[in-house]
Length: 363
Image 1: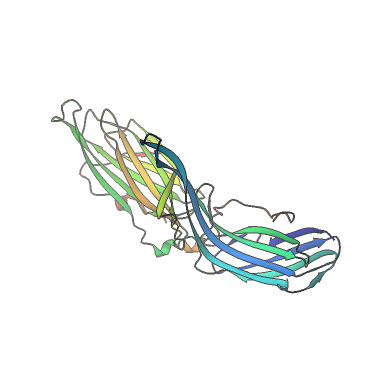
Image 2: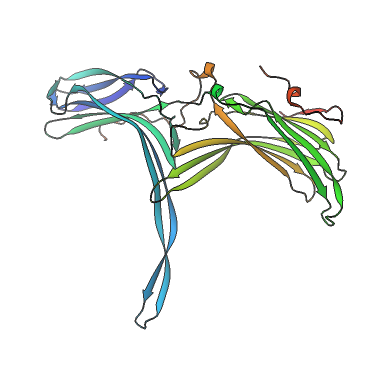
């Protein structure tokens, strides 16, 4: 007898689910001939794993025949790791652990359903440092010890509800004085700037609009450009052999405005939130994701640029919870059975005495 196919299919083709949702699907068995099995078992698992390796020097102290000591440094690999389990369940949809189920030749379809727990984090994958993964495994074993297995991944989307966060406007006032590079006692004027945005909470596909008011009082120092980027910072927490964290930072969106600019002007910069993992992972204790909006005002000469950063929360608004956020983990196929309203920016403008600001739009 030969088992040609053992596969799992889910009724939700995208394999994306929310916490508390019921998963339903089918196990498909296709064989050349009839045989007896102990049963068909399904295992459901949700877990997070963190792992990385660091090379640490290890000092060896050896004594030679002359009584002298020789010290050598030998590098050694240290494996930092941690695991969390969110749920684990199993069920027999045919037979049992000591059962005897007859499966005839041809195709057999066995349906199943199971609910997901409520307090579970979203799926996540970083190929080098860690992952949050959910899976279903089907296995069939014969009385003579042969075992057939197949496994499929599914994805959980649990974005933070932005209505539950104190989403606040960003207003950051900067007063910068400049001094002569050769004679620091001589002033080169000053610049007033104000960074404004309507809020710090966004969902996938929305735009971050930032307005930068510039009021320069220097004839020798000019703003040459303004850079803005959205940065993702993922932190991984290991618990063995000791508690240690490792962060991975990457830029996910950028925009730039090139000068020259008038001495008094308002720049508008904007970035669209791409499809990225949401902020938080509050139900996961070993992986955390946060976002920073970084703005750099570049000036001429030997003067330091002005750098500012603000926390951004990426989640979901209640009306969008059913329609957004692609899985953050890569899609993996079935394992073969042979293998085991926008308010005007004037709302947030601080009172200025220098008059009107010409607006410079940045595409």
